[in-house]
Length: 221
Ligand SMILES: CC(C)(COP(=O)(O)OP(=O)(O)OC[C@H]1O[C@@H](n2cnc3c(N)ncnc32)[C@H](O)[C@@H]1OP(=O)(O)O)[C@@H](O)C(=O)NCCC(=O)NCCS
Image 1 (cartoon, protein in one colour):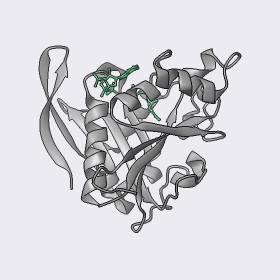
Image 2 (cartoon, rainbow, N blue to C red):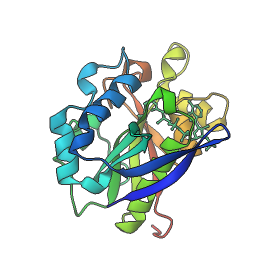
Image 3 (cartoon, rainbow, N blue to C red):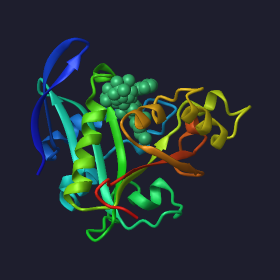
Image 4 (cartoon, protein in one colour):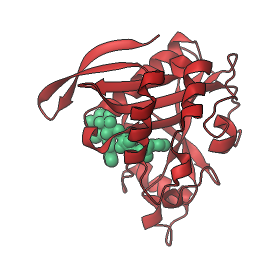
């Protein structure tokens, strides 16, 4: 299991933090994180419920991570294992079993990200990056080929009258535009591998996602 004490930095001030697997006693706090991170127009039904969280800790506890600061859950990240062939298209609902992860495959080759969220009050402290790095370590530890996930493109709605999602992603990749999720994912090492349409009920992202990959550097194709 994963447990590490470390210092997050709030501007120049070190703040004691713990990154660890989440468990049943964290469920209420984890649902609180979701409420703060995914306000309307994001659909409430997509926030975690206790049945989904119970499945995460029972079916794949290694994929259930959170960061705790002064006893408060500041953010969480969840993943499952799947068998993925490059080029496979999928929706969030299908690959994650709507967040219930009964699709988790112990023999899979890919660590697939179900969700990452950090409470607004704790953003830009490196917490998202720390959780992503922990998942990269898990990819290496479990000898998987890659980490993969559909990144939301929440900045897309501002440009949807003039750009396709593909053109929007190109402009984020070239640095002409900044997206709150895709730019974050690129800064923490993920590489875009195309747009998936009808990925998630997410009007800000035009219901699309950018498939974002991190390849295990110790494994070559
Ligand atoms: C995306 C999210 C998880 C980032 O978490 P975070 O803890 O604030 O990110 P970090 O502090 O670890 O940032 C890591 C890097 O990304 C950059 N970054 C973070 N947020 C960014 C943003 N909104 N725009 C541009 N860059 C950003 C940071 O500057 C940092 O860069 P650096 O390492 O080069 O200095 C958080 O904003 C969030 O929870 N958003 C809402 C939920 C969501 O949409 N999740 C994605 C689901 S696919």
